[in-house]
Amino acid sequence: MATTTTDADMFSQEVARLRAEYQAKRQQSNAFPPAGRPILDMELAPGDKPAVGIWYEDGTKLGQYVRLFDIPGTLWGDILGLERPLPAVKGHYEIEGDVIRSLDKCPNHPTEPEDDFEDVSDLTAKLPLIDVDSSKHFTKKGKYRSEIENLLKCQGGSCPGALLSPHLLILHIIDALSCLHALGIVHRDLRIDNCLFTPDGSRLVVCDLESRWGQRAAPEVAFDGGVDDSGWTTRSDVYDIGNCIKCMVYANAPITNQVEWPVTEPLQAVVEACMRKSPDDRPSLLELREMVEAIPVDGR
Image (tube, rainbow, N blue to C red; front, side, top):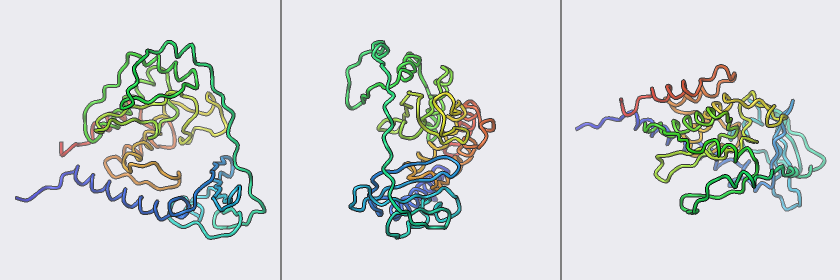
């Protein structure tokens, strides 16, 4: 009796292929461990000429400093895209496009920003007390009043999510954001690191409700603004769903934003819609849910 390869089988095979290809690039790149030297510190410098500064361990106090300017389609982009190796150059240097220049000295490591934590004791007292089960819970110290206020707003609510494997987890993200947006909360930091998964993979919970600092991946979000004037909106949360889907497909987080992560169909259309450059061109959460629910599952 002949066996039939289902759409789900083909999808799983393609995902496995994409993951293997990325893993091979990641393991071979000498710009980052394990093939590359340990990194002491990194700094992203936005602006007219955005750049990445990396301090590599070389036995000295500050390390070897390498600055890579953000110019796609050049040596710099190929290095951070894991397509080409970091050149073997002695001393501190920078790469701008395809030009390598020596630097006279190594800049100091970036300073840690000052804590801007707030007193949340009065709000924390309003939260219910539970017995902590380390197999189910993790604890953290509240830093901002907005996080506790958002948790209080969400009390008693639910994000049901329909069982529609393999798209269940995407629907859980959509439902979580729908709940937050209905309460006037923009997440601002939606990424795979802030998604919790049940051991059997049947449930996803969006966490970290500080709504303070976070992802600045959406094109309209500025790097030089504060919480209220950087351009975060509900549509920037939608943009970040695209990155979350990519991370779920690759079971990883990209080492740099320059890594190209193609996503197999039928999810590529969803990712493309989420990550459109103009916020007005992105789907609403309702439209996005309809897109995901319309994807056939096991031939249905």
